[in-house]
View 1 (spheres, rainbow, N blue to C red):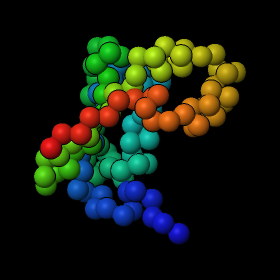
View 2 (cartoon, rainbow, N blue to C red):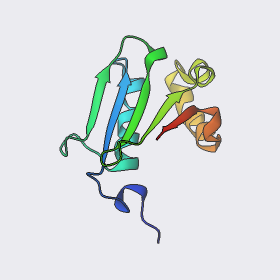
View 3 (cartoon, helix red, strand yellow):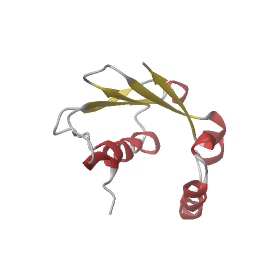
View 4 (cartoon, rainbow, N blue to C red):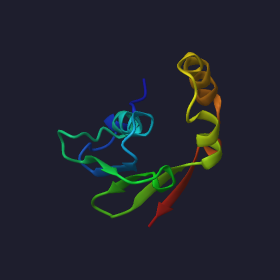
Length: 112
């Protein structure tokens, strides 16, 4: 059994910052960041920063020792399709999203 990403690395080695409007559909991304990295509020290496618009939204994962970072931004096309779906369509939409390649959901930028 292979380890999940956060169990195979030092959970304190990264700082994770999610910048988004204070709306559940955007702040819930923090749950995925926690699951994927092991960063948490309790370890003081996960934070949520409020920004004024969805166009400013991004997630950063920073390796503390090297300063290297990965930035994720959700694509406008993805947001336009999935942003305000009626509650009864969410389960089916979630299944579609699970099958999508990452490139159709967000842009990733790696900085040295």
